[in-house]
Image (cartoon, rainbow, N blue to C red):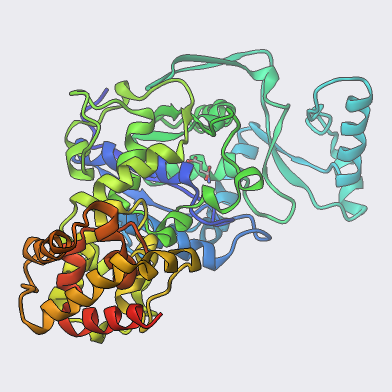
Length: 485
Ligand code: GLU
């Protein structure tokens, strides 16, 4: 490989929200660029006028930024090779297509949609694979004129010579060889409405933007063969291609919007309260092995050691249980202030002014280990904010027991006597233990009534911490409510 500066890109189509697969491909491009002090470019393949939407562009940009996959050039950032939207390059693609017509590598094709549909139907009936039969390749001057007179508007087709083998060394897959007869015949590169087709526009863009490596999903392998033919016809040098494996579900089905709904979108995980650090770590290790076998690492750590030779050849499996494991880890491990800040949108329904900043930090610290996603924080902390503790009817029995009533009344008395050291979690718990001792109660006979009275549940975080954070007023009020139930 030459000593050229590495230039890689992600080129999403804004026809849907940012897909998990696109995010992983973006991640590998990002890591490769960082590892080699290269440049990562974001551009948009937005020529599908019907399906492209600005809201999807925004979602893709926001999603990539949220994951921390910042790009040095391209959309919203600019750079030396604009524009970064294909719809702004229509004339340019047409100029290059004209060159291919002049060199007789491409031609005007006058076939109508009806003729092509009839051809497809014939092939289907004969049990043959659908392909263009290259019938428009050698029109006579008169035939062409007749079609024009009829008012037919031509598309531009690129000649795919057969037979020939298109081969390349793929940085992930190794040697790849594709028979050109499997490429579907001469291919449209510019539609009759003047809009360039992906396989053509992408070559022009990759050349315009001096891409050294094209790292993308394995589903593009046949496209790569087509694109190589275009590179060659235009006399351009080939970039290095790397095809990363597809992502399957646990049943070995491709991750798709149709089958998996919103769970294929990064936005879904963002709203559910997944940490971007967890998603990045999970996606990175999905098809790539850290050279030191590490499982937990940051984006920056991965960027220090990432390379394509450690990317797997076989499909990745998306396993939400594993993602949850990573997420729990980061919820536990990231700085508390960051978790509190990220938790705020989920706590918006609570009157946070009831507690000090320090108390809120303590609440989050108290329960973060129990969370799988940050959105669960609302349920986990609700009891702190409820004016009246919500209690399942069956739990009432617990606080109605005679022993329980004694414990609750004594705890209230201890508070009046200032023998519960609020602010000291262990001390607060010991105060409860001391009450238990006087009544010969321990374990759930002692703790459950207190838990139920204070939080409406027999399970939950450390009891001493609950008492400490609630503070004397609230604890007393909750005990009183429980005793009158
Ligand atoms: N728009 C294509 C996609 O999202 C890009 C493919 C490529 O990287 O060339 O799959």
